[in-house]
Amino acid sequence: MGTDIPQAEQHQVLWGILLKKMFHLFGTSVYFYAFLAIVCTWLQGLYLNYVVSNYHLFNKRSYLPAYTYILITSLLPQWSQLGVELINNWLFLILLRLIYQTYTDLNTRKVLFNIGFTFGLLVLLNFPNFWFLIFIAFAIAILRAYKPAEWMVTLLGTFTPFYLFVGIAYLTDSLFLISKLFSTSFRMNFHLNHHSILALGVVLLLSLTGILVLSKQMGRMLFQIKKIWWVNILFFIFAVLSTSGLYQQGAEIWLVCMVPAALFIARAWLISKPRWLPELLNLLLIGAIIYINWFFKN
Image (cartoon, rainbow, N blue to C red; front, side, top):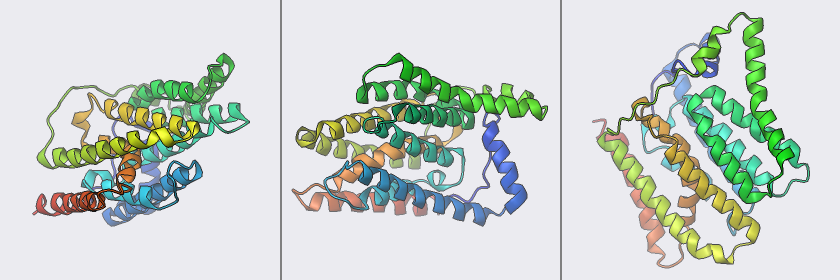
């Protein structure tokens, strides 16, 4: 568990404002924010589990997605400390649920507006999230037929948080904050330390195992469920690509990848033959958590 006080980059204007309010209300106790991060991570795991159960992505209800998410976010201290990336994951979880909902909800325009609004908040929190606009476009195209009017509603929802932000900035004489939103830098730096490589390697190995299991089961799935899994695969690809050029910001940038990775790894636990394989993979994950968090610190 990370024990650093939360910080904000220059372009993370909204997160910086929230941090100042939190520091004013709760002080700067490291233990308080560590506890808050634990609570956030556990609640995110449970929310992911709720979404998975609600849209029947697995044959039977279980807490495996929540269990998996909590475990893989424990691999690195940076993945379990309070920061903008952890808050981002709340919005990404909500975004995924809304995207799934476009396939079944009769009031689609309301859902599409909420998708745009959530995406706008993601960009306000962390400008590099703007890459996910492409993911949203592809994901909706997978689940729904193209309708220009509906896309306009999504764009309207996207611009609404910016409109509100600019309006509040103008009324409070804080227009200088707008330029800070776009002040992020993209520097390609592929240097990763050993424990980050090990953690990412374990996540990748387990994710690929889960995707392999999924590929063998997709032929027996309902068409609706199959489409949703394609959206999850697309999200995983974009989550990995979105970190390109941001390596200098720390290992926490990979936290967004843990949402789709948890879904695929949870499928690996369902391998029926040989039965010892999921147990071995589970021990590998737990062993990696202990090794990285203990032996790399001591």
